[in-house]
Length: 112
Image 1 (cartoon, one colour):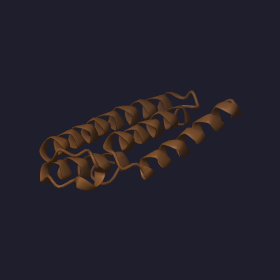
Image 2: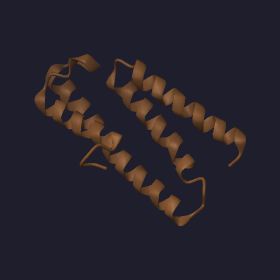
Image 3: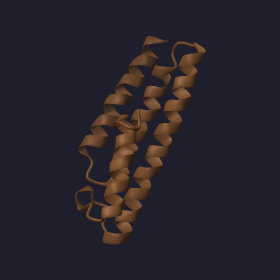
Image 4: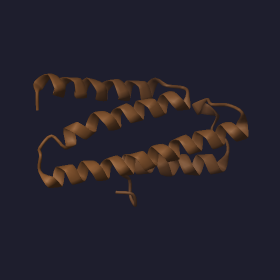
């Protein structure tokens, strides 16, 4: 992999993490998570081995499903509370969906 491209992907990982950590709005947190997902995919599949491509594809599909759950949870919470603020997660269904989405994104048991 080209060193400049690798540097861009690593900087994108740092940028996505920073955006996610510093956000107080659900859409910005989701954007940071998506930047991380899109930046790690080329790093996973940089060796052109079929198993690396398969791993990157599986990683992308699982992360896309978890991102959809994050968006669904934030929309459900906004619908019930009228707020998009991260600190206002008070609806139990939204909280459960978000907890499972974050567990999927982190690869926690039983989602590993």
